[in-house]
Image 1: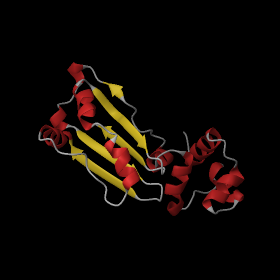
Image 2 (image 1 turned 90 degrees about the horizontal axis):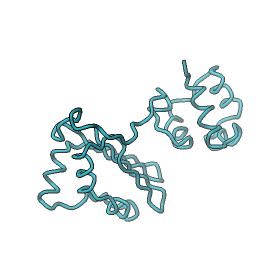
Image 3 (image 1 turned 60 degrees about the vertical axis):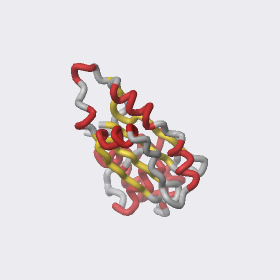
Image 4 (image 1 turned 90 degrees about the vertical axis):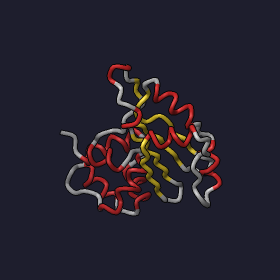
Length: 167
């Protein structure tokens, strides 16, 4: 069984980050990181978002080991009706703000058919610029042809990241 300590260790090494550097980034001692990786103790819950961000994974993946679904193609006979699907828009800003929006795909499809614009995120020009580069009409064209999972990841010049999942 893979433990949280093992996941921390493997992801840290994959990023070429030494234990002492990770400790410095999290404002903890190198001994604390060693204890986590050897399953002697666990990181404080308040450290999990920053730890996951440093390791380039989600908190869910850090805790459970389950990766976000990559984009996959689903054959027509196994596809769900688009009206039963959900579009998740996940925004992680470089300054720590997190926005999670779950929208029924049917609602987005209707909005596109009515000619509505891409949603705006107030006060963040860089992020809005990144969102404008996302063509929701093309995304839904892909969904109708069987695309599913993590379909889009956009990173702005400021380090804001937008992920769009359809499930």
